[in-house]
Picture 1 (cartoon, helix red, strand yellow):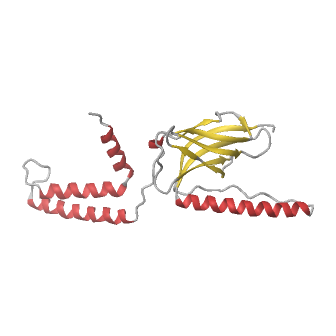
Picture 2 (picture 1 turned 90 degrees about the vertical axis):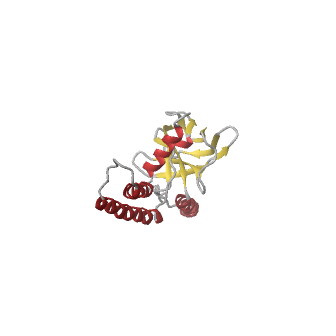
Picture 3 (picture 1 turned 90 degrees about the horizontal axis):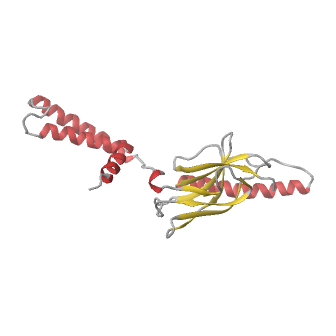
Length: 216
C-alpha cells in the first residue's frame, strides 16, 4: 500500500499549529490515564500532572483553532506556466499552462500578475480553467513598459481578500485612465497608478517566469 496518505497527513499536521497542539494535548492525557505498565509516566502524581497538563494544552489548541485560517498550498495543484516560455520577448500575450487539479479551493480563483523587478505587481487577468485537459489560460495579458524592459509573469491562487483588492485596483485603474485622457486633451500629462506593493495572505504564488518586452 502506498504511503502517500501518511505523508499527506503528516504535511497537514505540520502546516497546522492548532492541530499539532490539540494532538499533543490528547497524547499527554492518554499517557496520564493509561494503566499500561512500562509507560514513560508510571507514578500516580506524574499521571495526574500529565492529565492536567494535557487538558491545558488541549484547551490552548482549541483557542488557537478558533482564530486559525488554513491557507491552501500551491504544490498539490501543480500549476505551471507553459506559454510564453521563460525568456520570451512579448508584449500583449495569452498566458497559459497546466495543472494537476482542476478544482480550486473554495472561493479561490487563478490570476495572472505582472511582477516588477523592483517590487510590486499589477493584475493582468483571471485564468479560465479547462477541467478536462487540466489546462488554464488568461487572454491578452499586457506586460506593459518600454521595449527591452524585463518583467516577470506569475500565476497565483487568490482568495477572497486578494480578489477584493484586485477588483478595486482594476476599477481604480479604469477611473484613473479616464482622468489621464482628460488631462491629455488639455495638453497635460499625469502619472499612472503605482503597482500594488504587497500581497494579501491569501495570494499564493504557484509559478513565475521572466520575460522581456519586445519592440512592438
